Length: 483
Image (cartoon, rainbow, N blue to C red):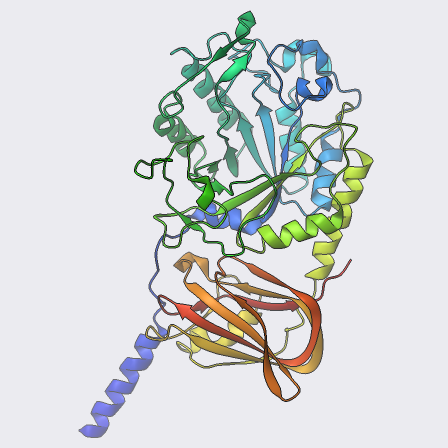
């Protein structure tokens, strides 16, 4: 009888151990998981403002000013793809109010320009080129309209919502509907040339406006400075904080009320909020050049700078959104094309070979045969290593079998179950003892640790020292930066 009881207990324990860990905290939606897989995408600014050599259009530019001499959607998209971008967001209407598609909502649109003899649809051309190249497509339609005479009145919202409906209806599935907090101020406003202030907490009726997005484009992530799906990182420098949580609770400056676009807790945006109410990862938006619009006096960021931003955005669980600015031809400048291509090659070549592939990994604790540490090297995002429920810290010892030299360590949590890990460190075996080379906090969707100097070793140890619940990790990698 005792033997039967022991067998029953052992089998029960094994069965329990094979159960998947319970989710922890706020969790990503299907559309957010798809967004995490993109990692790098672009935001195109190209309106009459380009031809005025300005950053902000006043709304008074003659539509005839929009006259690119050699527009090529394919040139722009192919350059973006060479840079490793997986998606493109087009600014279909910026604050100047000029619509890049033949809209029924305003006369201030592309049909009034010389582009394609008044029969053009730049949104459609960019969308088709993006899909042909295998890139996702999204749109930004600014709620602020410095041209529209009705802006600031109770009649404007219906116009803005109608513009969103046109964009949501006519350009296929969108991966993002992008918004920002800029709204209200001086403008042309149909010739009034005055300043118009609005209450950004109520004027756009975001609850019902974003309900249109959810209904018509359920896979479109809503980005704004407060979310709803993707939050602004709080700067336009292209990087998140070193400790970076994907969870967030948007709050107004008073610390009591839920924030609305243009009114958020920006100081907390770069790092996020541990155990925030919502899964709301950060987007790190940054122009390729100094400004969002093309200016001949500026130069693109160097590939080295872009790679550094990649490590500090994607490598901190965020997304990198690069601002692309076509010139007056309607193409990306040769300097921009070269910078993108070189950056894309750096990322591709650096992460082409996981130096840990084929290694033997020993875990101090494992949940069961479906959750063993070998899952960390199978390049399958659906598999992961996990510990037993009571084990909130653990060690992974990686025997590389041969001496390897690397300067980047990659770790990824299994985020469908939440962001769990709060502290870890990395050691290498050197001179017959373990030497700590890094100590960190968050991991999340992806953590890329760039070491100050390359290290050479045959053994690596990852110590997960703090987690509120059992641990999950889906990937581990060692890499050497390459051009």
